[in-house]
Amino acid sequence: MEFIETPTFTRLVTALLSDEEYRVLQNELLEDPERGVLIQGGGGIRKLCFAARGHGKRGGVRVIYYWAKDRHQVYFLVVYP
Image 1 (cartoon, one colour):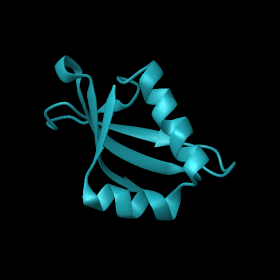
Image 2: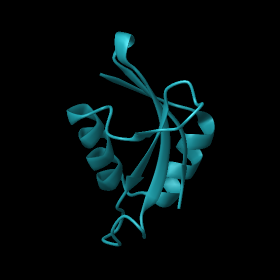
Image 3: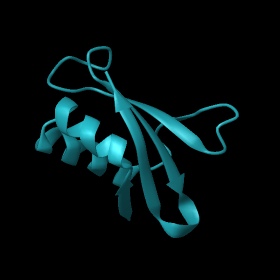
Image 4: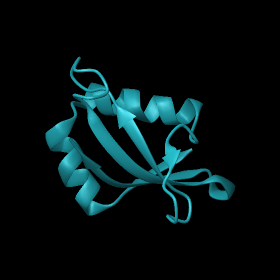
């Protein structure tokens, strides 16, 4: 599987997640790329709540991504607290 980041995602993820946390996020999506909830009307875009820095899901981040199943690619669009 290939992970592709938008420039906005890259800038934000480095501020919000450590390298290790980001690896954990990627591994979770490797195991189940359909893990996130489909955003209604989003054309396949998903939202995933990810626990960061031991704060649980509520203290973690939200990751907006698109899973291109036929190409085995995850497009990371944006991440926010």
